[in-house]
Image (cartoon, rainbow, N blue to C red):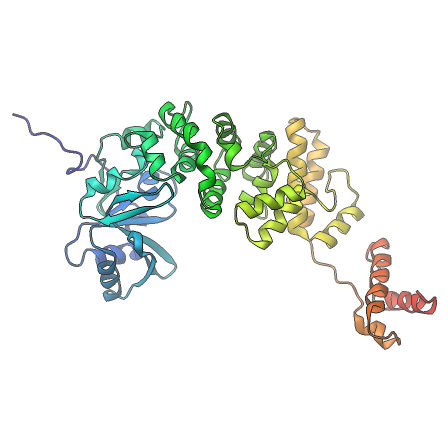
Length: 433
């Protein structure tokens, strides 16, 4: 009788030892965690991306040891241990600039739709069974042996198919965030057509998305927006009535498609990179109040809120037809970062209407971005003390006079120096302005 192969106990495949696996920092963490004989494996994106020969991001490690034991082992080896999510068994190991998320194997005892009460275990199969997608059940030993406990993960990864482990609706009901994670994983690892069972579960439970915290929705939404083709995912989410519940302010996805093309493929500048908030701004179709509502709902920071509102309602138009003086005025008043945002937004809007633009117009947009990148901030020559030295009493009149001179200085294209501005200030004072 031939022996039976058990994917839960035996490796399914193997990857060669890659630089991230043999790095001194990685080896130090693995040596610390296995010092007393525990079996540890790499899990998550580093395994998936290694199989697909993609660049590696975060390195996650799973271990059967409980979190307090993990901390003890790391500290004994001189490695800093940070209890970042100790209630759920997660400890971050810090070696120099490298960070490793070390999580204890666990099973869900109770689920609440947004979080779960967990129990730690040493059963790799039980830990895999609680995960969301088949491609997320893969694990890899430090020697490169791949475990595929359900025998589906590697096949789905190779076929670019994202499927839930077991019953899709059950997995989503255990944690509603998995609904958004599905679209994020499909954007990163999937290809059309999407899994019908997964879409049915997402469509049926989309109305419960407001139960999630704004922070969790924001984090997943930003990752979706940073996907290679975010407009396609936005269309898919809209078709399944998911976007209605997570971002009802979304408008024409054509602008998002154009923005993603510009910031990731068309423009080759160090100052222009994919940016989730800018892509969000290109997707919205709302006024300032609507942008502020989105910012509040997604728990954006004050700076992010102001930036999103500026993208929704620009204080100044930044267009391919603007003069050099108008561009300098925009850069002086708004700053190069905001001008860059608005230039990309207006360019994306233009492309969404007419994808084939005249060469001169595209060169004009490119020129705006290059000018913003090279911009040296202008400094208004006068200060309040200049008005006081000319006998103006401290108070509101000082600010009003300086504003008047600054407006005159702007109208003169910022050419006037300190002496000329001081002369203008004296003339305004003499006129009783």
